[in-house]
Image 1 (cartoon, rainbow, N blue to C red):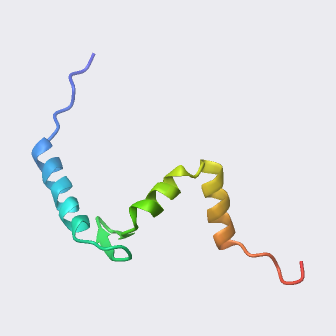
Image 2: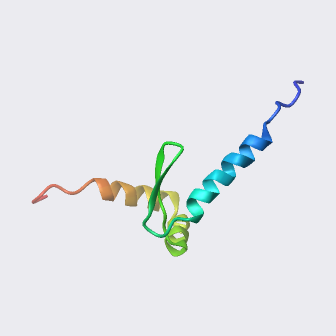
Length: 73
């Protein structure tokens, strides 16, 4: 059995607080780049609606937003 890995909790907490500072100042629709990823602030209602969708619903929604039927099909 191996010993548990040492974790630098101070740097993890500092990073968490840095991200919290960024997002706490955002308003709905604002964008920011966090760790190389662009994020967009959404309302709580929008976030809850998105989280309430099933995985199949999300997949269908994402697919529908990228794929359009051929004209005349």
